[in-house]
Length: 332
Ligand code: ADP
Ligand code: MG
Image (cartoon, rainbow, N blue to C red; front, top):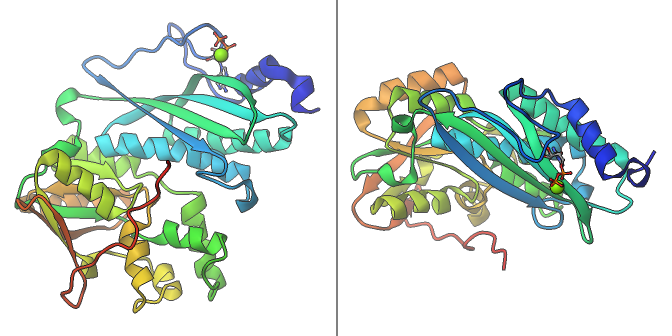
């Protein structure tokens, strides 16, 4: 059977059958609107992200299952950065005529896996045809006690700047997928390509940091550390000094990227789609933060200090100042 025979409502029925639904008195897929109840005392936290074929992904890069995982992961990452617990999501699809049903099923497989891993329920969405490529829009809703939520605006001069995990893998993975970089090491290539196609949102770490009250500002790194730390600085009215020599990269990244080439630092701190967390915290919280990172099973590293300069300055290991070669992806 193809999409044309299944039709819009057949597809929605199939989607509903694939995802566990909110239980009464809540209501998920099937009516004009969903009915959802945040836990008592909790504030709703809502974020949305759109992935468009040709802009955010190429179908030639592979599996729609991973694309399904990623389209929810990028939204989960936004809630992690607020310190919220994810609860529900909405899925809107614009699908080109003649799109293979097996590929839609694979996309739903990936979404269902990621949803189950994070305990989020699909509560609704919208479905329509597309005159160009596939478009996937996910809206996620979560909750947290209002006083625990982490904004971009709380950084203070003297705070330490932290990152979770390692940076640069995803950007290097994309370069490899696009055939711009030599595939020197098959296992390392598979790892960094996996970090691009199937990023891991840092949900439990973000939540633990918020609940412990250790962090002054947080953001997830989707546009590269320099750009995203820049958002924290703008909204907090401060600046930052980064020591790039302290920014952690994976062993696989180090095996593939030439540390002496300028592109090395470009990929690490201006590449994007890391979906790691960048946060600021008072120095006295160092040990408590490392403890939470250990529990979450990921590294967390201090990479610089918040200043009152109003600018982000990135020092290379030799002491010179790094200037990114592009300002990042521009949509228009
Ligand atoms: P309306 O015409 O009121 O927009 P729809 O016919 O589009 O309603 O949707 C019917 C139900 O199916 C709604 O509960 C909606 O949230 C759900 N729905 C539609 N598309 C999707 C989708 N892609 N994923 C999940 N739920 C969907
Ligand atoms: Mg609709």
